[in-house]
Length: 342
Image (tube, rainbow, N blue to C red; front, side, top):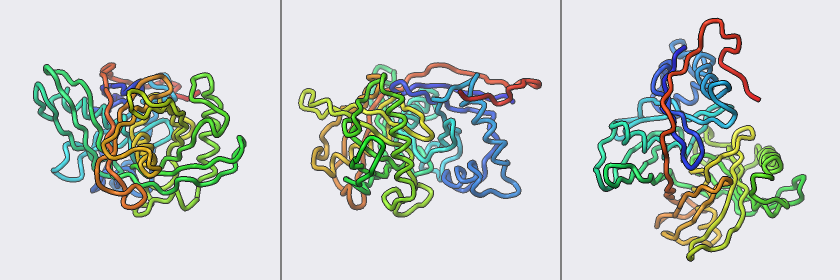
């Protein structure tokens, strides 16, 4: 097995873009290809899920990856209006959305020449993901990419104060659908703080809240059941205003206990819609959203829409940087095969 990738990090969170070495995945849309990839569909002509999954495991697991690895398989877009499509993956499977990955893909599409861009100004990269079509606005100065603004699918708030009984006591949880379903809880309500030293407790809390919400009406997507179910739990701290800008720190516990090193792109969309529904953030006002490692995304809700109705459109701005180009191999006789996780 030979697989070629180019790797980026977005505010500290890895994103491994797979350029070749992946079997063709049939389907008319990116969402259908994801269903086939996870084994919920397919045909006699489709690759066995285990064949494709072996590539994912090879790249996500040690010794070529790690438990926090994230990446994407490039696939054809749904139609000619988009530049590319992507299947997002992590150590546990395939996600429906990924904001930090969209930021990295936008930077790569311009840096690689796939999408033409001005020396100074902004290029628009349209990307089809399992939850719909998103846009990366790639900002350029002096021939260099200086930042990317991720414009998400509409975000809808399902609950603002859903009561839950946890091991840490009773809490009220907000739930929003922003391409993936996120539950949001103040860390202080659990007696915790968003600090690296509290990660074991934060991870345990995130897993428990995800399990408690399983099967509840709030986590069911209103139109597409493939987008239902809690993907991430956002535990956040208030940091107070900074130069008049709302300032929060968060850690997002996603999939089976993975920790987002960035402020989480689609999770930031969820936070923006929740803050708008609470009346704390007006359209056009900025949120400074800090990660557990101190990196920052900026975010805002665009005018129009209703977070408690049809949803709102959000923008999240961050930076992505290339970290390497790789040709991964799996040699015959390697007893570890596609790798392992600790």
